[in-house]
Length: 129
Image (cartoon, one colour):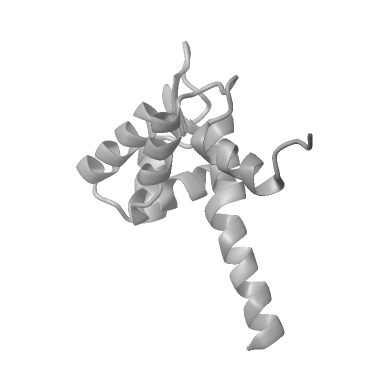
């Protein structure tokens, strides 16, 4: 007797999302995707991945976002695990105690999600446009 077909295997993979030994439940991954579905949060994460650690003040100046709006979006990104808020025991040379940075998951979801989609879009435009 033969084993299941490739189509059956794909069906099983889809029903068992995420994999059995996944670090996070499916809901956590979906929350991350929803979080970067907002333009402000995408731009915050994109800036942190590209520029590195930044204070809220630096992010506000870089992105031109009001303080309350920025903090609301930073809280959302932090809550879903895409951004980390770090506090220094002593101030940096710029006097900054608290700063934000993209988590490893934040970097991965950005690089292998939206950035990959945009890269493919540009490739298609170059090829067929």
